[in-house]
Length: 363
Image (spheres, rainbow, N blue to C red):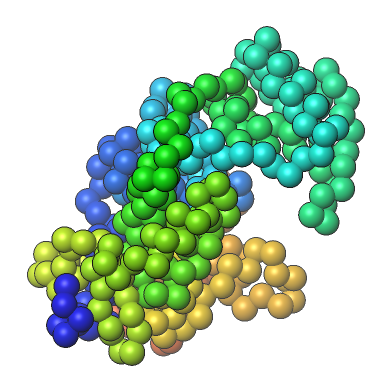
């Protein structure tokens, strides 16, 4: 798009909502269309990956991704964050290289790898029982060494998550085909990964694109130079425009001004990691107030609540909701960035959203 025909901020906002909150489809198609679903272990009232998919998968129920994962062509992996990706994306991420272990830790990792190879699908407790590795101090935390080794081997692409049992990862061996390590191939892989980022989070202000490029370089350190080169070529690689003094990017071939980017009048409770709200910089530009996840903030310092979920009604971000299940019933507390909407239309939308949440949670 020409820099001289810029969309308005309102058009960018509608475009962001409409392209991300697409018509609900099947679970495999939704994961493929998103390209990455960020995961988080916290349940409030459900895990982030389930809350994200609930808006994009028809008749989705909490825990469905975990139940169906072993039969789907998807993988748990670290991308810009930890989550779920289509299996074919793994070839872009690996080989990721070593994890900064010393010789002793490398030897332990090789022992664990040999154990999983011989044992088959392996629980962390199996490794702990066999090796009794003990604990280690890393990054300010006291870590179980067996878990640390399994997670490191998974990150390097030498293990995969075969399934989860009650939320616990079950690991198995995985082998990748040899990669063409030529300059052109590495550059193409880095570009494809950056395209995935832009496809998921667009439209992006330049500063947000830069931050995501930093996360991507951390995720694929072996392609850090190539990711930086792709970032430097963003002007030629992506559609862009100056809007209210800021440079924005989105995928080539998409038009934020198109009339087809219509926003419905549903009310939605969005996970803190939902693509619509993930970029806090963009959030404030679009809606004029600051949203923070306060789960790790001391209780007395919280303004919104433990797991406040942004509350989107149409294209307006009204405020936030804290939801929890107690005695088999869904309880909710709402907060508003401005005045609470009056009239029956908001109440109907809220009642419908709460009823949909009950169905999603199976209560």
